[in-house]
Length: 153
Image (cartoon, rainbow, N blue to C red; front, side, top):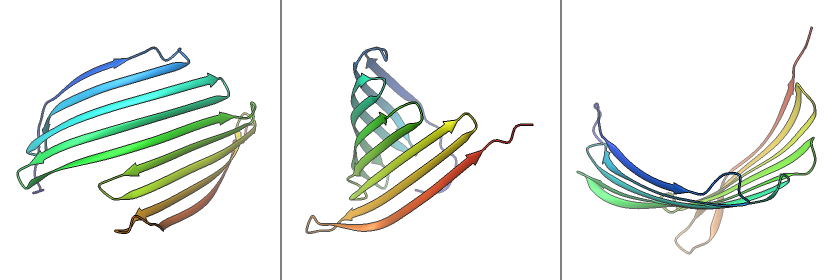
């Protein structure tokens, strides 16, 4: 895309059930300009909150993009889980597949909150690519540890 300023309008229609319900659905369609071309986005998400301790959601996004230099369609599929083991421990996971990059990514966070102002978080990020033989190979591995402590005086 050539450098420069781009201005465009987008139009959106969305239908969703209430967030307070155990089962939730979201349908979204958005259309309009996109960097000198056009983009049509279609999104669907289903969520299930079994209790205050367990959540799972799946979503799928399709973008049909038409630009002066060419067109393409991208797909992004996601699976998310949140598990609250108790008031101090939680575990969140996100698994995504992107067809444009032919990549699968995993983000997993284990969080420990012993008391207000103190937090310990383990984060695992793992990226894989899909080769022409439909085999996965690692492209990224990260393991992070975050410690937060608020000093009160």
